[in-house]
Image 1: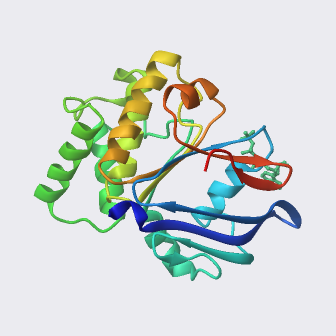
Image 2 (image 1 turned 60 degrees about the vertical axis):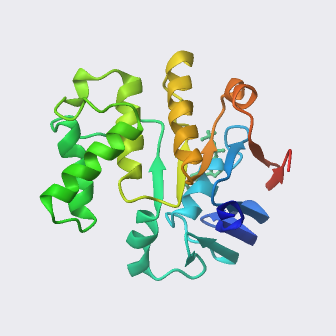
Length: 226
Ligand SMILES: Nc1ncnc2c1ncn2[C@@H]1O[C@H](COP(=O)(O)OP(=O)(O)OP(=O)(O)O)[C@@H](O)[C@H]1O
């Protein structure tokens, strides 16, 4: 079964910001096909943990492995390749406002080594279909609602078929109905085999879309319903 393949392993990992220990002795695993929420109070370390996973913060103590890459140590030249295997979505949509949806996505494809125009166009059409925006290709970001823009951001994160989608407060700026749409997109991505790790303050979503819950609390990461 694909669900037992680990895409993320942290094993006695310590996560620091500078010399300050934020989370100590963190051990958990996420398998292909898992959906996990990451919760915890403001300042409890959620973003620091996620940054460690995409090597924005370097792991210095303990072991970590994401999408087949060892985090400790990771070679600087491997970091862009690691990030291609991870889809990353933040709270604030970061689309280029002066480029169409299609050009926003093409920018990422070109930056990650795609060359063939036809293949790029096909992949763009596929990911936009996946997020329910099959007709938005030529639109400019300002012609889209906040929720639609966030779906383009999710589509962009899916371009290189990541093994895991990491989302930091992806519904933070969206109202409940729109947050639901984003959750449905995440669920369909997850059902197609991509693991999802999503940091959120939105406890309504946890009730409505139950899944694994990891909580950052008092310098530790605790599994709530394992
Ligand atoms: N760049 C940084 N340099 C130093 N300390 C930092 C840095 N970023 C965060 N911290 C500290 O690390 C701790 C954890 O912050 P982090 O942003 O990971 O928490 P969080 O749970 O994501 O919070 P929020 O829910 O508000 O996003 C906090 O004490 C914060 O002050």
